[in-house]
Length: 401
Image 1 (tube, rainbow, N blue to C red):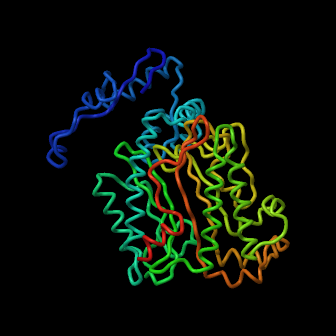
Image 2 (image 1 turned 45 degrees about the horizontal axis):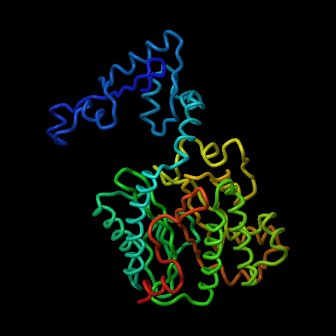
Image 3 (image 1 turned 90 degrees about the horizontal axis):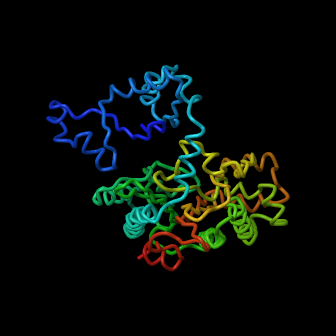
């Protein structure tokens, strides 16, 4: 608890009891934990309610952030004397905005922690490319890379996405058997020991080089990713980077005869969202979608941008102007989602831009996504971490030998 009036910081909690120590072993005391972060005023948890009551009785405001767990909401109900149903409506917008402004800009030390997480992520992806072979189940690969993370004393930044059904954007089912020529998406990252996240996606073929169709789609996505990264610099709106990537994807789809018409008009209409129904990226830091529990709109849009309601574009998590110190992901993709294709065709949606007859033969393709983590610098950007193979020759060398 930070008491602005008295300029004090207090830590509340209870030291482990002897019974607890029997089960979990000796634990640091509350005072020892406080000393690690420079907090000298440490009190039993029961005193928190007393101190809050003392403050509210004399008319002082209590600022708190949105609770994200049911038990925390119940604690807030007891401490603040408000119904649990009202807790989320009573959070402090001032404190939320202050925390967001502080955490949007990553210090050098924080960037270094993200790069430690990226070192683990790189090993995860390289291991997956090397070991994935025809006849294996996806879960065997997932188990190996999960074990690698545990062996580093770390933890996953989010549940692993690994599937030959890449058209399912967040596919956490790992029961498929890999077959020669399958194309798989691996979206996976780890945390550093101080809980800073990494988030990397790679797509690779199983057992053989990319076939012609896979190569065309992959090259299109890679071009969109690299051009998107190249466009990142201070004061550039991330929404504009997203739209640039959409144009590159549309150009590639036209080269494959899957789309047609004016590229600018097609993107403005949202026709590309049939193949790219999500945003280009998000903030990253202490969480893989950093601070979105505080408010995705406040974090990604602030007061300077407004969310577009158009399908696909409405899923863009980040639109605001970029600042030095932001860490963002860049993750374009192309997906062939049979149900979505069928629905749009039935509605004749964007028929002036989409070649539905040609598209019928692609409904079994799956998907491709490529993602890296990028720091906005004073003079441009820097892709964080050591390079993780993504050029076609690099990927094929690891995955098909």
